Length: 314
Image 1 (cartoon, one colour):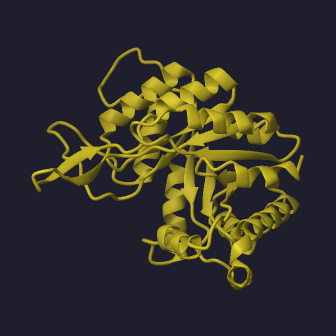
Image 2 (tube, one colour):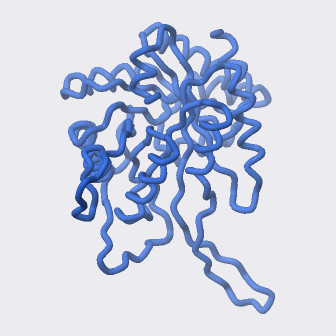
């Protein structure tokens, strides 16, 4: 089932989750255990992140620094296939522009369609320390809106090559939204214009970047509606787990942590996990009262902190 169908048919609010593939060289067992833990709570879907290749440097025994190019966390499509076939839980595969050509993207989408995976999240992706060379006669999507356009064409049976008698690919397309503005956008109005481009190109729903102040989500939803963006907007929630994240999360994700929340953690740093869970629980309660059909958790494969929150709503 597609994400948009889950939202339309839901009688009660639901909780979805985002996980990451294991590091290269590690077993998929840990990811499967996470899904096994979440399965009893009937998640409508699970997102699996995707990662492009980066440059990594290693000093050899002779003192020479070796530069290697590889994906640190491969396997997104395979993990989505495992989850859907073993657990019968729908999955959302993240598709990136960064580090992938249009031709590679088309191949991946064809493979997903063969596997019966019909949900994707179209993202630009993080800029890494390696720019993949684009071979002659290949092309790339620079922005997420261009990626959405490519997927929309495939939904119409339009491929990169001029093919005849093609079958269309069936996808539900999600995109990212930023309640506190994307850090590269000069202001919120411009960010809204970029978001509307993605929706106009065919995005079916929006899932937000994490936020810690529900009012910012409420304001974001209103801004979207005022801008003519009327697709569902799913709130994304992250549970604070340690004191280091007070600086790490703002630095990495460009989000603001409320003063009251930060003061609570600084006053009782040894209880940061409990404070983080209580704050997230209060956020979820407020979002459900606002009427959201789904709350999306960024769990990074750490399911323990989520269970205590989710259980209280069942």
